[in-house]
Amino acid sequence: MRLETQDLAIGYPERRVAEGINLTANAGEVLCLLGPNGSGKTTLFRTLLGLLKPLGGGITCDGAALAALSRQDIARRIAYVPQAHNASFPFTVKDIVLMGRTAHRGAFSAPSARDHESAMEALASLGMATLAGREYTRISGGQRQMVLIARALAQAAPLIVMDEPTASLDFGNQVKVLSRVRALAEKGLGVVLSTHDPDHAFAVGDRVVFLDQGGIVAEGAPQEVLTPERLMEAYGINVEIVRLPGGQIVCAPSYKAE
Figure 1 (cartoon, one colour):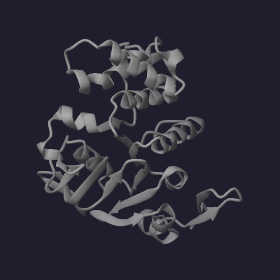
Figure 2 (cartoon, rainbow, N blue to C red):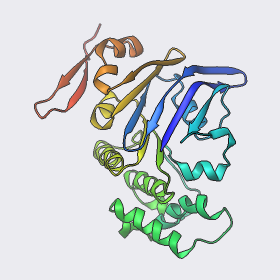
Figure 3 (cartoon, rainbow, N blue to C red):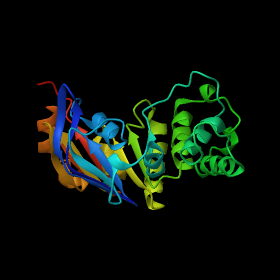
């Protein structure tokens, strides 16, 4: 699976958010998308999912123009994990995951035996099978986020787009979700992940795209893109990039008063 943009311009009829976006997302890698608020990360995701029309340029999935694909065809290629999901009806965990199978059976047909198997397989792969019968609104925020990932897995798309999937999670659940993201890539799935935290990109990212000033200002390996100079320019803070004894790279901001 290869998702590619060509000189893409994104935004709305009354406002162009970013332009000249050329990026690729490949199977078996985590592509992290970073940038300050307002740089266009969510708008780009909505465009990649076919929910917003490009203002210019194009998007292809394995060479097929996204604009020429039906909603169902797009859903078979690209799954989506939002920041959070608050169900208004007391669906069970399994019911939520079964919703990912709609791309393969249509909106109004009943789930097949294979759909139920796929849902349980997705939950089991995340260690969530015992929660299948629980009410989705009565499990923890971290567990709900894992359920949304299971829904994306049940969708059986080769690429998963995740919009700040750890935004509302505590530290422990952030680590669990990021560990799962890395494992998905190692199994051959492509993951496009937006985050506000450079440490997340250092932890799980193969490549980073940094959005700012109306377009991509840098793209490459995390340690090449997320430099103290670039973070200072984008966020106005002093940071130090530190390699820990175990090899992990972290971003250490300065909290000294100016």
